Amino acid sequence: MSKYYTLREAFNEYEIAVPHPRQCWSGRDKDGVPCLAVWEHQLQVDPVSLEVMYSNFEPPALGTQPWMSSPANKQRIKEIQHAIDTYDGYIRIILVTAADPSLKALTIRHVNTFPQKALKINKFNDQTGEFNAYVVSKFPYGNFERVRGAAILGWTENNVRSSAA
Image (tube, rainbow, N blue to C red; front, side):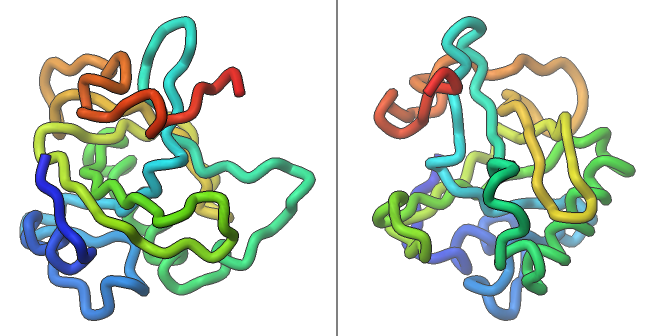
């Protein structure tokens, strides 16, 4: 795990050039491998299986959110589809920690990269960009395990929410 304070530094670790990091949530390295920046507070630990999962699905009552029509989300939709089509749904991650996750307009406290971890997309809405994924221990192919328990990633239970919540 590498800790940075800017998205540009994190994308650079994966050799991904992004022109405006705060307006880009995804990119591809020189070999075409996709990477997503995701919010840490959207991680969950399943209380039964202890699998670490990510979801950015909005509750149906909230309807369409402003971020769904942003150019950054449109690009992210392309990167997720590329990951599904080319890498069996595996995608690299940059984990973004919000200064205050309870706010509607989020600001970045810091970002982390996990070169040995990946997301495995298991549900994707190609219209809104919402998706669910499991955190896995290897990228992109070969034997992998779903990551169990937040401590494996260096997170405490305070960093991830239980899906039972």
